[in-house]
Image (cartoon, rainbow, N blue to C red; front, side):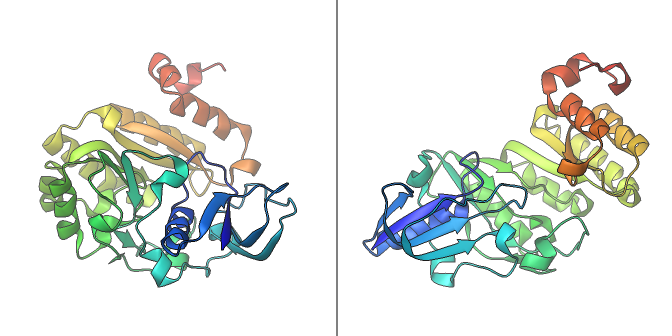
Length: 292
């Protein structure tokens, strides 16, 4: 069969589902390619879209069957097990020495701004061993929503230690669950980047306490310890600024995320430009002094 793929969100970040779909069909002897709407005719086209704000792909497609998947098309569409468990086709995106994948799925937090609990369940469970998507690549980008909430977290951290690869915890580790036992494991991992999140005011005491303890016991430098700061949801602008200044004081690198960015007040976009452009952030100490 001839298989066509569409990454609606663009190719800025590889689509793991499409890489697994590609690997599955190639294992069956099928021909797989990014679609050519003008010249291509396909037996099946897979169209994946993660973000609901991404413009849809509405070009006419010549295909016997079109399958749409991804969060933007609904929370219930999932890959069949035989595809979900495939080793990704990294060649699809020309990826040479980086592995992408999930060790766990689900999260018990059930935050109103997040779809993970609705889509993957309100319990963090192990879904794979590292070798299911890693084969000696130099770097591993983990996509887990809440690895530390999983009962198998220490075993999974041991797998990362044994890999000796550089690890990027892209979606964040739950700093509220950061114990000394976990810290001991993390100190043995080659950290490329570790992300945390400070989303809500009610969690501030435990977050600050654990951030201080983590930095004290690991000494990981600022540029490798990034903290997502959610804005425009249920915090006021004064508290948004407090979090940014406090994180800088604690030697963490804040990174502003805007909820419903398309409709957000321009002050949030201005704040995001100031914080997330690190050249500006390090040269201009206070937001009040920032003049775009």
